[in-house]
Image 1 (cartoon, rainbow, N blue to C red):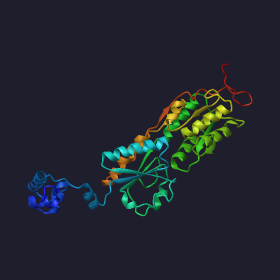
Image 2: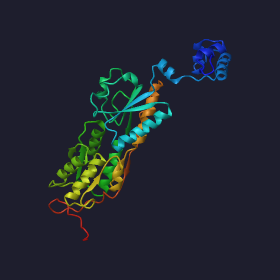
Image 3: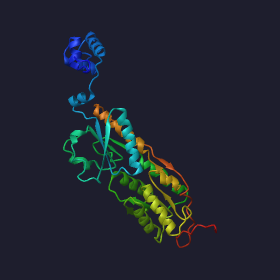
Image 4: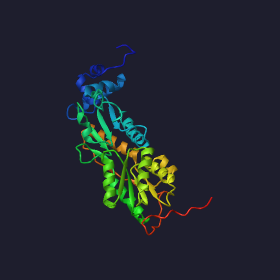
Length: 337
């Protein structure tokens, strides 16, 4: 063997006086009960003496593995999904996997037109499991922030508990007329938020909006110009809440004196506006989902964790303004400049 040629498993087999299959069993740790301890020691000694290092690419090829995972998310630009990616990518790298991102439904064709043979598993966030029914070759799948009633393992947030804490906080402050700026997206996580809110505030008034500052502004304006104007707005997302905040200011309403506003996610802008919101551990969501997928790839049944969400109280909530005899709220007193 030339000095500059790396040793192969065939060279190790020849040096140890065994077959290549025996070398493979020993070096992969699958030898107990199949070869003797003495033979295993001979193989390991020969491999060490020759400086043999297994070829991971060749091993993956034999196993039909690419060590690549696809993460399907609605967008990579939103801070929430960027954090999901960060958590999943960190765990993937720690276990020798690469993570590729597919933004659905923004990219044409869905995650089914590409070479599915190039991935070992999939993580799919904030979407319906039925959306993945078009996979030509089913792969191990873990769903994030998605319907737990499906067949795939899930990692979810405690949305119901978060809404319980949020509505309890508003009730303690005296708010009973609640408006809901609801995300106009037909996925489980927003359905769950609406159901949890309606269960605690049966007479909630809802306006739906796509997730943007502009649509949040428009939906909040419709709510805040009603004759029975809500004293608090619960928004499904911090982006919507920022739009609602702008709408209140445009109408001459004080936040929180005239109307309280809450969000969901706890993005950086929520902290800048001192917005009361629900903090969702997005990075932990991605990390736990990747660990669950590793369980699937190794033949284990993954857990279905429900991650706690934290109510973060800031200055955008306060006791509701006093009611007048005609059922309207009195504007909060303002200090002259």
